[in-house]
Length: 267
Image (cartoon, rainbow, N blue to C red; front, side, top):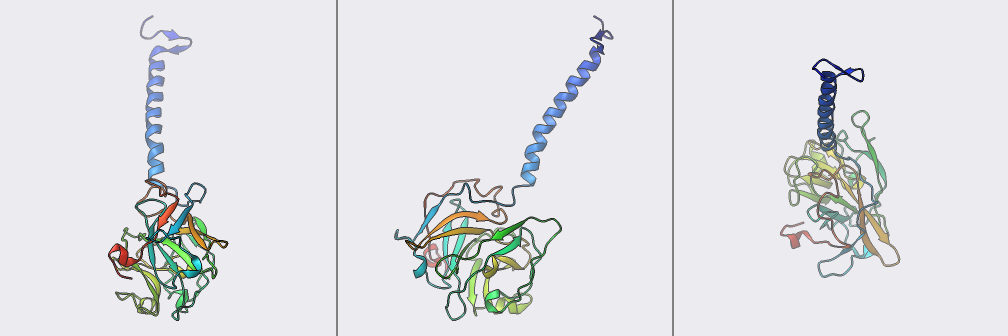
């Protein structure tokens, strides 16, 4: 058979062209699919595959929700061994527990630019870019529904404690905010790196940029029969610096919480 001869109605040179095109298409698809997955990582996470981890103090004793001090922050790692979080039994400026209600948030939102709910901040609607994904922050747990936990990795550039820390109601932030009353009244999580402010009393919604994503919330479970607390999942934006919340070394069924002093900082 010569160069231009027919093979079942198709010229051999055409067959070669088709085979080459198919090979290029296959190689392209093998590259583009992982690329799409990389540039659009999963924004939301459920609790189905997360460990159910009992929270314990550094002495090994389980954390009892009814005995957790009000407005005292604790640090712990979940769901990965390198993802830092904060646990707080939220209260008012007089040290009384405050119920933290469930709220629907957006993965990317416009900063509210109002003080924390704990100090009389306005309950503004959560707004953001068109068609952005929504999720539900489940609210506080424990006997007063006042205990919450959030990722303590800032959603702007990844700063952690002690730069990102909790200021109880009535305690001004370390640096001034704009507008200043948001920081002066306290009741916020404030990042000293670039000034982002979050409201832990409304699901860590963004009060002041530059971050535009709320802090991911650690889903807590309270066993009323034992008074024990468990970390059971994560909800909200993907933890900063991770392509997925379970991409890494997952923690075990017991997780230790530490005071800021125990990790070399101050509250």
